[in-house]
Each structure stands twice: as C-alpha cells, then as structure tokens.
Length: 152
Image 1 (tube, rainbow, N blue to C red):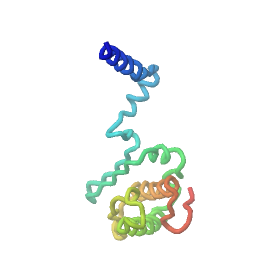
Image 2: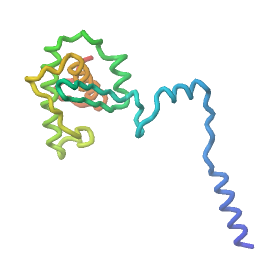
Image 3: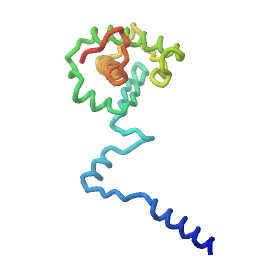
C-alpha cells in the first residue's frame, strides 16, 4: 500500500511539473522563421565580410551588433577611410595587447588577436564595420580601448 502511494505521489509530481505550453501567433512564427537560430545565436547577429582578392575574412558574432550597426551607428560615408584606419590601428593594437594578458583582462571578452596591418588597404566597408564593432564592444561591455569613453 505504501509503495502505491509513493508511486502516485511521484506520478502526480511529474504531471504537475510538466512544462507550460506557449501559444505563438502567426506573426511570432514568421519572425522566428525570418531569424533562424544557429548555435544559440540569431543569424542576423552574424556579420561576415569577405574579400577574396585580399584573402581575408572578418566574422563578427555578437548578439545585437547588427541591429546596433543599422540603427544607432553613424551611416556609411560619415567618416573618412583615413579616420577609420587610424582609429582601427589604435583599437586593434590595444585589443591585441589585452588578448596577450589574460590574467589582467577578461579572456572571455578578448578571445583572439586581430590581424590588421597598416600597409594593407582593406577598403571602406571593412574599416567601417570593424570601427563600429569596437565602439559597440566598448559601450556594451564598458571597456575603454583608447583610454577614453568612445563617442557614437
């Protein structure tokens, strides 16, 4: 008799702890289909820049960056390419220094070095997106790569 009571209690707990059902509207399902998930990251949050002539590829996987780039960042053409290149050299240099000091700086933020060379013309698009990623990164994670709070 005791065994059957324990079985009923366990069975009742299993039924009582079942997951709740979420009702989605057609609009919700359409939005989900438009932004399919890849390894826990929304596909729209992945920015990839490829230039086969120079044989380089930049992949930025940062939730919210693509939205920030299209809505908050200054539009393309706002900065000159020379300005972006100078800022990127400064930011990349500090970024790479922080990657090499995992005990001093969070290795989860600074995971890998960036190979950005001053003598190579990466083009406006690469410089624009890289610069804006550095601005986004500093604002989101409250970091200062150049010793001052970045401006938008």
